[in-house]
Length: 285
Image 1 (cartoon, rainbow, N blue to C red):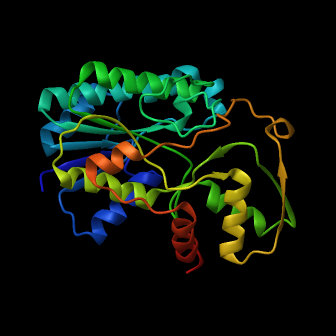
Image 2: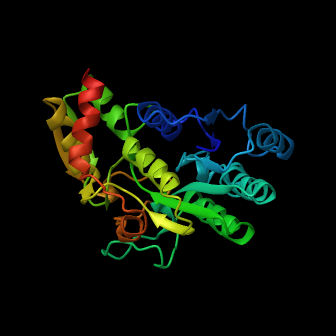
């Protein structure tokens, strides 16, 4: 297989890609941390491309602090928009294909229908807006791109909702979790597998795709699933978004329609609770 480079290789999804690459004996995948592959420094990107001569570039680098982004607009925009555009330009110069990870936060989420790739976007906060700007910049600069929007990523790596819930449950008897925001938890190992499936398919159907696990859940359902599967006896109460105000507004409904990615690349997607069971077992062991 030709060279693949992963920007944001030290983050949650980067670590999951590394695990899947190892499990599948996929060689020539090079994982760059933010210091090794700074997507904001043109010269650093050029050096990486000159060295590895990649056929595929996977961009997992992103500013993902949703609430902090409301105050750090320019920082979020630099990473999520300018950084993405820098990689698109480098890919164009080297005839590489860019696989870029985006988010359900590009949608307003005010319609309770699974969201397709062609549905109107309408981000409600800085994070979603800058991620959408990154998508648009890539599409304008580079034909050979695959943008994958995903949602509610968790795994045994990095910081995420599942690990936070287990940590909180060790110290508390009661947790109140939002029950009126609905989406789908996505096991980042499954997403990593899908990315390598896309590369292996050699299908050049470029464009935007949606990937999350199958099924629908609220954050309350997700938390309950975590505790049930972990055998944790903690009381969990459902609350409304209004009872837990945050700086950034979240989309109330962000279930992604996966028809396009399944049909185009022949990808099978696991049900969210089945994948959560796999992750919880790994965390327990």
